[in-house]
Image (cartoon, rainbow, N blue to C red; front, side, top):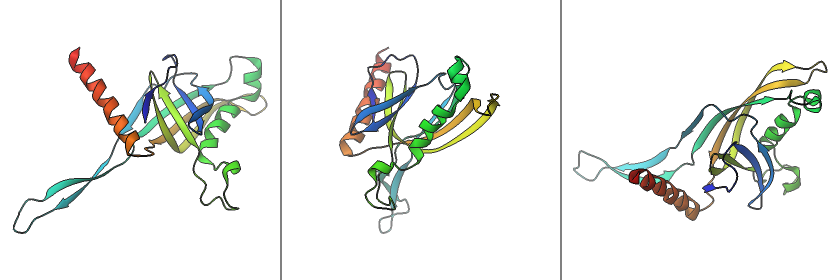
Length: 181
């Protein structure tokens, strides 16, 4: 669900969500230069008896998908340079691993995935991190990466029909605002 965050719209961010609240936040050091967003809708196609043209009816909507590339550069302070981009990478990796505190059984089979909130500008979306890829391009003398590119694939979560409706109402308000200007 998209929402206005109340945060300064200077930097993007990724936050861990627990019980609906932002638990830990990683502000982007550099905003992504490009964001790709898409959505898929599913339809049923049926033909009536004797009708040569099938009619379409709405079946389901998938959440929005996002792709972004982030740059982590750990050379601003001595402490950052010493540890490299290890902390940023660990934060991202925590979204694609089960949270061991939430295991309902020994296998974690029914454990819900960690939830995140992705924000850019004045909007934010509750998302699942589907995948991440790191490309380390510079290291310090200790062998820690100090410059890392991170590609993220995310998908929005609609927890109920109300959250889906809220997203559509928000988009309609933006459309109406654009029509006025």
